[in-house]
Amino acid sequence: MSPLIIIGSGLAGFSLAREWRKLDSTTPLRIFTSDDGGFYSKPMLSNAIAGGKSAAQLAMKTAQQMALELNAEINSHTEISAIHPERHCITVNGQEVTYSRLVLAQGADPIRPPMQGDSADDLLSVNNLDDYARFRAALEGNKRVAILGGGLIGCEFANDLLAGGFSVDVIDPGTHPLAALLPVEASLKLQDALGQQGVNWHFGVKAEAVERAGDALRLTLSDDSSLDADVVLSAIGLRSRTALAAAAGITVKRGIVVDDQLKTSAPDVFAIGDCAEAQGKVLLYIMPLMQQARTLAKVLAGTEAELIYPVMPVVIKTPACPITVCPPALGAEGEWKVESTPLGVRALFFDSTEQLLGFALTEQATAEKTTLAQQLVQS
Ligand SMILES: Cc1cc2nc3c(=O)[nH]c(=O)nc-3n(C[C@H](O)[C@H](O)[C@H](O)COP(=O)(O)OP(=O)(O)OC[C@H]3O[C@@H](n4cnc5c(N)ncnc54)[C@H](O)[C@@H]3O)c2cc1C
Image 1: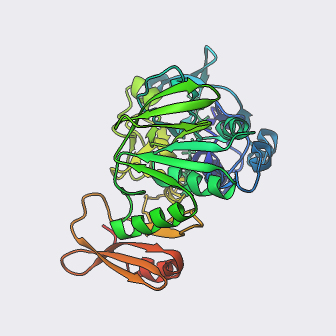
Image 2 (image 1 turned 120 degrees about the horizontal axis):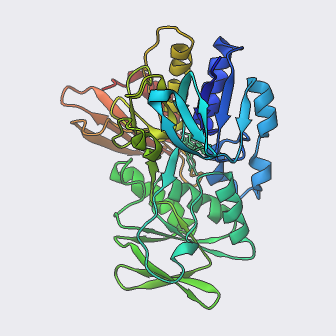
Image 3 (image 1 turned 120 degrees about the vertical axis):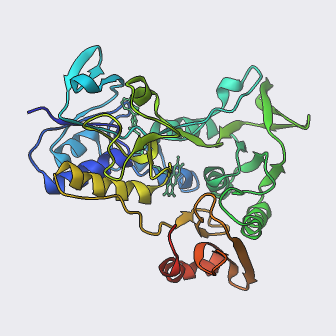
């Protein structure tokens, strides 16, 4: 019997395998991954420096343990170079391997900013355990970190590095941190809290060049100012990995397009996680991929199922100013009503009929997240 093949051993690939094994314990399962095939929780990567955690300490299970747990064959450090939907096979190290069904759980790539200068290649980003190990090694014996991007990942790393005793500069072309997710009052709370702990913010500018200057990396910013750092972390965003699917003629837009059964445009090929675009959205978070994995497991097991997202608040791991946000859908019409309470900022997004479409809470006001989530009207 041809196996179910999953490409990717991130949280999407492994969550699907776990959910599917609850429903089908015998059909052969093969997982191909360019990683080492072990299990780790990616959200921990932006919260581990202060605690002095090594990459090995963050690895929760080896590939062998996962293979045993899932009754699967895991092919580590194996890059898939092509998919042939018409023949139901993939190319693995020049050989063709047949599947009954194929699941693409390939994740997303960090976006590389355009950068001049002789040290442009020294820019680091952290999107898996190996990246984290490289980042941690680069920090060894150093003190100054410049972060490109004041979004979710940039802010989480800024907080973690401060707590770990590093000096931190954050460079962002916008006017506030997390501007894409939060109303300005909540952004400012975070900006103040991290600023008070020592973050040097550089808003309204981009880094354009990075050169070696003695022991330091010198960044030239778009206003012609410069700053020196020992390590530069790029956190300007992620882009779904769609190239393999696109080359196979599978429909891709911002991600690999799937329907409510997680099916792509090719027969017996499915996609989930950071690489997938479901219901017109690429959601680069854990809760959506868990929901996708549960739905797809049922579909693969032959049960009727349909992707329905529950309310999915995002918790931002910035202990200097804890935040929970449930952003309104992109393009939703309405406005933020913001209160600054003694407990923190409480921002609610209402439409013209006073229906609650989103919220953002800071500090102790985050305690209200469950109550508000229950009131939320999903669009
Ligand atoms: C630092 C950081 C902190 C985060 N914090 C949070 C958080 O607090 N809360 C939250 O909800 N989300 C958070 N996220 C987002 C969340 O972690 C991701 O949405 C999720 O882990 C994505 O899982 P994935 O399996 O889709 O992708 P990945 O984990 O990227 O896995 C993709 C897999 O595909 C494999 N692969 C790709 N192409 C090929 C190929 N051609 N051949 C073989 N293998 C291939 C890769 O090797 C990898 O194993 C964070 C992300 C980062 C980077």
